[in-house]
Length: 425
Image (tube, rainbow, N blue to C red; front, side, top):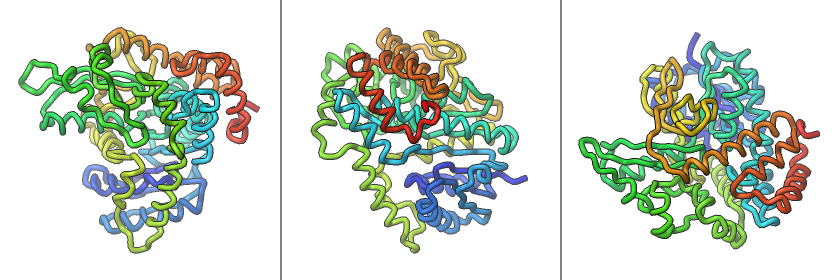
């Protein structure tokens, strides 16, 4: 039997990025079948047709399947790439707007917005995982980019036996930014955190002993297009002397980020909706056979590199080091063994091996533990339709934690999302 890839949520405008990765690595990832699945058949046809043209131009001679049938897509697949958005962009925009009415952050992956996205998405991903156990190839892997990636990995890795990694392009962009800043790729680094709550805590050039992390903090770290930039005071960077992922700005400068959201003419979701409409117009051009450069404005830099290099390491048992969301298994001393954390891991046929983390401080410990409590409560709420767990999750989150805001906001968001929350009905 040949090697099959399945992309679930293939109507996403990010799909041409993944297809480009399949073409680039065709020598080490010899897929002979690619299934593109989406419930939005109109978008699937537009994006899928471009994917077919890309693959043909790249010399791919295998089967390309466009389908709205999830089981057909999963059948026999060894790698399943997940990039779903339950409720599509209108749900994201509601997630962004409703919390602002209560003076809270509605960001897509953290705060109240990420929480509501998790409630919609976790049950769907768990259903995909269960179907994969029945239908996919022996030893199949789910490589998930669907947000909130860390919470989804927390659910899948602790509630199923599926091979799975959670991926994000944040880490790979942070490392690239450091390499660009110090003008070399010959360095070691430590990385610790949860998805979209992470730090590089050490940077040492090969053959040297000086740790550059304090000097690089505030100068490197890769700002993401969907996170408004805010400059950090030197005192803050001395207090937490690590290189933060851009999402830490929501925790470091909470009120300033909320004010930026209030002042913006459009939410990020509304901006993305406009970008996607323009991208889809380009994708419909039958002469287009490559990923258009405008896709970079959507915020998916190195998305394909992260996914395909991880798949390559697994399939070919390379044991390469990648930053992924995986079970802790004693790698981070202050977290539980079954906590899903984001850190450097070796990837091979035998699975995922987290690498021990040594450099961190009390701030990192406190914030990771608090957000992990929120994540676990969110998974419980999503799986069981548990309103008490949902409220407790919001109360535990460092960006929320106020009952007078959390309770009415939760009620409004559950009502607005009831079509996508069968567990709560």
